[in-house]
Length: 111
Image 1: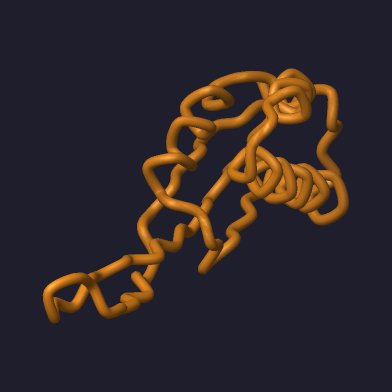
Image 2: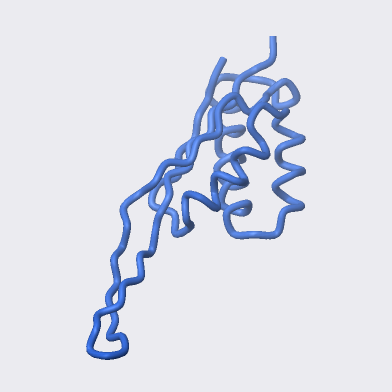
């Protein structure tokens, strides 16, 4: 039995969020929550919220036991880029790209 949760348009760079997703992929759900609780950065907090939602979806919608769940898939895709411009030195225009992410987490029961 699988359940998934998706968070779209999060204001964190996909490269930074992928580092966190790589840490929890394939782990038990309880172990992944412990890892995310002890990592001190923004992408860990956002990923923890998505993982909590995926676990709640599995328990409430599918009747799964939370103790048997593991992270089957943890994927971070790039979202839309907000492009910002500012005046730079020597009459140039500077660029600053604010990247966004889509975090997808699928949890499944261990057989």
